[in-house]
Image (tube, rainbow, N blue to C red):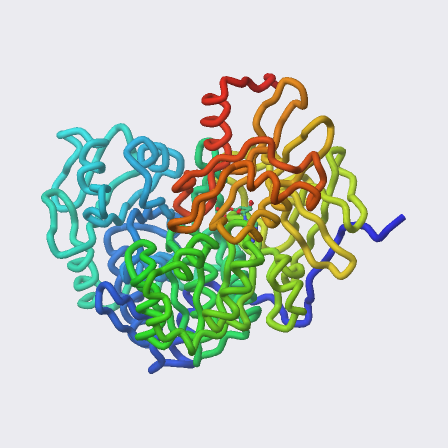
Length: 562
Ligand code: AMP
């Protein structure tokens, strides 16, 4: 039998047994005057010493409110300096930070507040069409407001403090700025009393994840989980204090707060935030003005940057590395990022929130074809196996479900033993729901979600393969391949394509482009053109929505399965 699809990462560099707060303290001791945080849209600049001081002050102020280690503190805001401060302040005080997606509306807010019992909520006043203060008001009743940011209500019995960002303080809320001031004045800082009781195995962060469907689940992560993942991701990029990382990805997601913030802080690198939410021009501008050496993004962000009409006007010559992740990374886009954005050491990461998140990362020294076409090899200290439908490990080269085990696997979904047991088995393996293939050298290819795999006439089809092929068509900007219900074959292949600006092409031309080049059963039966895909905020195409919509339009129905 061929070698089994099981790999285990290097262990020559030991895991760090440290809390998130200790990581910041060590950075402040080692690189006090290095710039830690630059937030372009707020004109904020903090050194490592400054960031540590500010975080300690806020931590003290949160404790002075009466919050205690283990309490949950939600944050509902786009990217800003206060987000990063809150991340470290909560960690220093042993409070569990609850990341709330800034795109959430009242129903989801209600769900999250109930699910994890937040005692305090830090919220931005508003952003674009999201009026956070207004939404908060709408989930509380008149009598719930106790004044000055304090609330008492039956619906959310744990909730006590509402802390608002920004200068324009709304009635009933507590000012984040004033809280920081109070922390500065407090002497002694109550932090000293709790610091000794913290340990790296305590949960410190809850991130809501629903993949692309379903009710959000609160993945609970410890200091140990995210400190180590951030550290090894930074190692993978060969980060050092000379690096300046541009972070246009959201902080509420692990891409921002772990691959961005913790990868930087464990290496003394500078974090540069270009804007509150992704903005193509602001990102290119920040890379140029702040002389960034690294840039993160989901594939669609890089596609937007490369396609910006003034792309060539920005000086990106200092870029060296960064991470593309979060969704399949097209080979053609990777090549352009290397050639045109100078990111010769760009790496691809693969992971998921429940595994802190990264379990595969390409290495800057991997052969170029592996670097652009695979997600690299398994991360240090992490184990991965690929299994079939009967939970048996498949041989190398055979696709199956990717399972991850090791330090990085979450503690569980918050107070949800049932759904935790569905995801993490008794042997500690996190079943990711992703389909992958491991080659003989341990390089991994993600070929789709288990749920997105197309089964046409008994033939398994991995959408990724057809997508990669279609990216070669010069007029194709982006493509999503989905399976559409079909009476005869069970499912048929459908390619949904975004064309380059100004391009036009006939569906038949796309079909002809595939004929004779890929196996006949993979040639799309349907081709549609769209301007946008339905996306999650983290850059994932919501294929189930595309499928639903097309099946509705075509009037076809899926056979119900149990
Ligand atoms: P999240 O929990 O939001 O980080 O989403 C995790 C999911 O994103 C994974 O289960 C994959 O389906 C997808 N994903 C992340 N990185 C990659 C990648 N490099 N290639 C393909 N899919 C990816």
